[in-house]
Image (cartoon, rainbow, N blue to C red; front, side, top):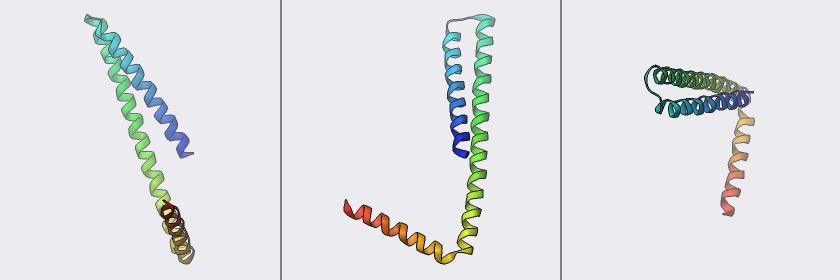
Length: 100
């Protein structure tokens, strides 16, 4: 779920940035009021992209904190299982890296 949200926000930001770039290129050939209008619209698009990026960062931090609390609780409730899991992962990594 979190990965889907992050991907959706990334896609939205890419689209907004591309639209803003296209507007800035089009505004380069214009003068006067029309150029100012295009510039303002481009700036609004970039502001929207920044807000979405900030929202994604806030959501990712909140989800990360929830995962840390959950992992901490699990380790406190199951210390031996956590130690065994850590040792198993370490052994597996050692075998994989030792083959190289």
